[in-house]
Each structure stands twice: as structure tokens, then as C-alpha cells.
Image (cartoon, rainbow, N blue to C red):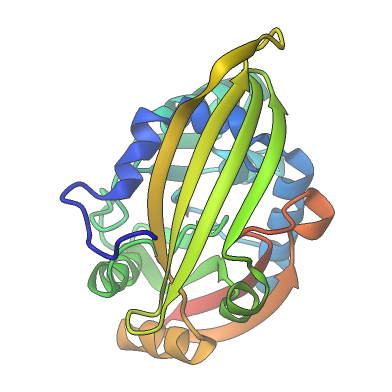
Length: 278
């Protein structure tokens, strides 16, 4: 059972050390263009059909959404993520897509966004990227969003559906994956803590074969990663946004994952939000 004690180094730092490994194994997320385009369509729908530049793509990961937006003609995009590995991959992928001149990638912490006040018109935060810090730090992120947004600017984001996660996700799951590294078992555990309103999880990658299909005498542990997420109700989100100067004007829940292979995951069902700076 995962401990609720927080380590001295936040677990998200593992996305720098193991970013390339995660990218190669979790292809259903990080190399899934149909999922990315579906997410962009949902983001545009909750944003009334369009976004306005300059755009900050917060927690950009490997650049999926920033690159997709650039491909649709959006310019003046700043994309930030805390993982050096992910930002390097994103920069490479943007060059391959021919849109690197439209996007500036930076390694940065959402709690301390390296942008001037009132410098962007829209913030996107897509792909289940909010809720992984403490309540105080999550609030700090929303405060930073307010600081860098222009008056009447908007946040367009998604969060894990609390109802889906609590009702549908199993305490354990196992997926048998064929990857470029070989055969990998992706093992997850999940435990809900009512007091903290957080879901405590572990993710373990066990490598059974090499890329040629040669079996190992014993499985190799490639990654064992504890992680946890605060699951907010819609009422809590409305209060959180209002506290930091936003009006939550749109919300819509969509079962995103089932048609893209994410059948038992925090990204399967998400609530899509638009909040406007007052």
C-alpha cells in the first residue's frame, strides 16, 4: 500500500530522469495522434471554437497539444514543462513537424511561471496535468495563471473526473504491452484517501523481453513510481477559481479514453473547463 508521506523530492521529478522511458512505453498517450486531435477538438469546443494568442501551454509534456495547435495555424505559443526530457523531445518533434518557429519551449515549474504579468491571452493545460501537488501548491498554480493572463484571458483545461475515478477505476490493473523496448508489464495500484481527497497510486514497468523478443531470466524493473493526485469536485473547482479571480463559465465531461485505448486510467474520463479572468 503506498504511503501518504511526501518524499523530500517531488515525484514529478522522475519525469526528467525517466522521461524517454515513459515516452517509449506509454505510447497510447505520448504517441497517439488521434487522442491528441480529439483532445484539441474538446478544448476548442469548451472554448467556443477558438483560442486566442499569445498562448501558454502549461505542462506541455512532449509537446502534443502545442504542436497540434501550431499545425492548426496558431502562433506565439509558449510551452512549458518541468521535465527536461519531455521538453527536449517536444523541441525535436516540433522541428520534425515544421512548426518550431511558432512555439517556444521552456523547462519550467507551473508554480513559478517564467513569464511577465499579463503576457498571454489563453492558457491551455490539457492531458490530466492538474492536481499533482499539495492543495496549497495547486492553488499557487491557479494564482500564477491569473498573474500571467491578460484581463479577460481564459484558462482551457481538463481534470480527471472525480466521479469516474472513484466509481470505475480498480484498485489494481495490469497491461501487457509490446513496445520498441520489448514486452513490458505495466502494473498500477490505486488507493483513495478520504481525508486528503487524494488518489494514491503506483506505476511499475516490468520488462519481460528485450527488443528482439529474448526473454530475461527474471523480469527487469524499469520503473517503480509512486504518485498521487487531488481529485476535485466541480464545486471545489468553482471555489478555487473564484478565489484567484476567475469565473468558471463552462464545464463538460467527456469519456475520452475508451475509443483511444485508455480503458482503465486517470485520463479515461475528464471534465473540460473554461475559466475567465475577471
